[in-house]
Image (cartoon, rainbow, N blue to C red):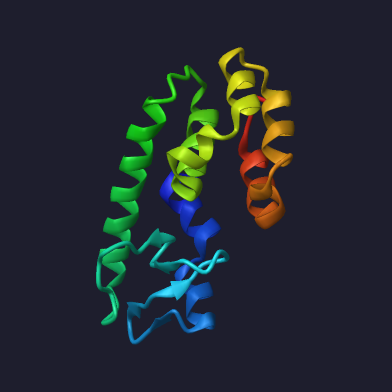
Amino acid sequence: MRIDERLKEYEGTKLYQKTRGYFRDNKFYPYKDSLGKSTIGYGHLITSENFTNGITEQQADELLSEDINIARIQYSKLSLALPQDWEDFMVIMIYQLGLGGVQKFRKMLAALKVQDYKTAIKESKDSLWYKQTPNRLNQMILVLTNK
C-alpha cells in the first residue's frame, strides 16, 4: 500500500470522517486531533490557514501530498540509510510527530543507524506516542519486513 493510502487509513478515511461529521456536503472540515490541535483532511495540522469553509477531497489530497513531501525532506536530515519499509515508517512518524518529535527518539535513531531493527521497534513502543496511538503504531510495525 502506498504511503498516502496508509496515512489516510491511519489519520481517518473519508468514510470514517463522515461518521464523525468532519466530512459533510462533499467537504472536509476542521476537527481537533487527539491532542486538541486543529486539523483538517488526513491529519493536516492547521497553523495559519483558514479552513472554516472546508476543503474539497482534491484539496485534502493535495495537502496530504505536500505534507508527505515535507516529511520526506525532513527525513533526509536524519542521515539514515534505511530499507524502503523503514524509510516509509520514518516518514509517517515525522508526518505525525514532526522532525523535532522524532529527534527525541534518540535510542531508536541510534538503533536504526546500526540497523538494529528489533531495538528500534522496542524503543518506538516505549513512548508516549505508542501510548496515544497503539493501534496505529502496531499497524505500522506489521508492514515492516525488516524486524
